[in-house]
Length: 452
Image 1: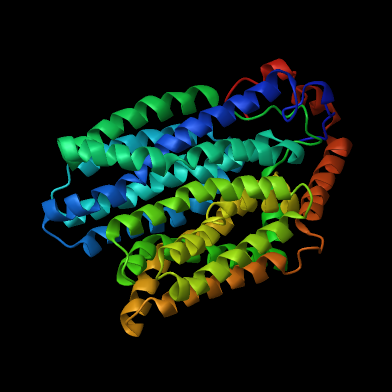
Image 2 (image 1 turned 180 degrees about the vertical axis):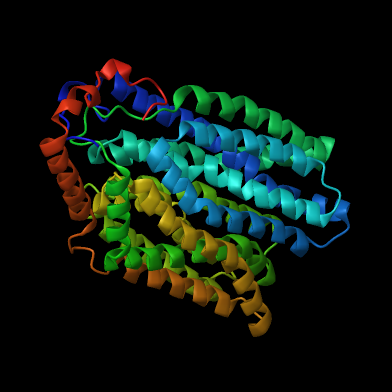
């Protein structure tokens, strides 16, 4: 049983003081580990795609399927990871995930057949779900109140947004000098040195001294049930599934489109590279404008700009200026979902069961990201051109606009359900468990790192 707890405003987890400082230290750690994680575990793949295909004597399409396998495995892990985070926090999970990721980079470097590559990537997808952005976001959400949460998330993802800028050239340089197998061994060593000790030593759960009540499994289950019964949750799911599919399809097919309309491959790759830089710009824009406008309004506006850019790309992308303008418009929203999703979920459903609710949402989003490039390729083959593909991407962005705006102002039942559950538990405890109160109310000093 748990009882209601007395707030401790003098040294809250979300404000100043020792614990507030530790929250920002976690943000700094994640800025480093997420940059290294995405750089080593994800952005190495497109750079090494052709060397791996040549070495294994197979097609690039067959090798690309390994990445789809990883994304599907990551989607399958989203809900179990979310439940673990709500119950136990992130230290053990993210340390194990980063250690597994490093070991799998070593295993990747030793594959001799395509089936071995697929097996490694299935496990790598699980490791990514344990160590990358989603669990890191859940840890930060638990540490910061709404007034500081966006700034904390921004501090992590702005730095991590440069992972491709840092690691893709580094991977290319290492591959050119040493080959793809040695490159993966070097990256495994680098990732081990950065992520494993930082996750193990710095991540811990915030103390409960600043919270009104300590959540229980019953509370979390009630809030998850209430959120998934809320129509607004599924409106958000439609929005971010459509947006994730659009982002994934554009990432894979943009260079191909630009080449087919006559641009040199070097120009096409350079323009596509703008997406990484623009993702940071979009996140900064979102943070600045949400001070004056509701978050859902800003996000919907950015998604609408993306829709217009994607639909216009087949018509203006034949010129260099038109291609740059359209890609810039689309790229502004490239990283917005990673900042908007945790803010919208936490604002609507609270933080008690945030990781479980986010995991429920992330599962269909990850599936959409995995399947969209294949669907776009099929549409391109059927239609013998990229125009239907880009118009469909624009339509998906418009669907995301509708999902974000749908019922945006209506109240959420989830928080009420969770509070009602805790009220019943507290009432029962007040009647039957007075003798246990002293043992439950532990002093702050007993809240050692890693303990719930």
